Amino acid sequence: MSPTLEPIHRLAQGVRTHGPALLAGMPDPHDELMSLVWGPRFDREHALGLVARQPEVAAHTLPALLAAADHFDALHAGAQGRLRRLIVRHRALLGVGEGGAEPSTGWANT
Picture (cartoon, rainbow, N blue to C red):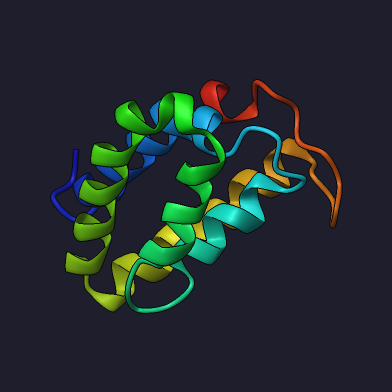
């Protein structure tokens, strides 16, 4: 894998692993994920709010989430933008419209 894409791939793997638990029950998981990475720094406050909704999985997801936050913050602006575009692309590939529900298997299958 290209050294340029490896950091993004690592973050995507984390979303595939922990996203279903972290984003369970959210009306639009892509919007939630995008809100975490919208700015130049990972939105840790919003992430902690998502974890607080799911205390039964917090011990498992919180360390990975904080590591992902540090990893995202270390990406240069171009890589951060690419990650955001991948989230938008994933949403389009699943055919999730504005405010539409996402298939529960969508995160794990792509």
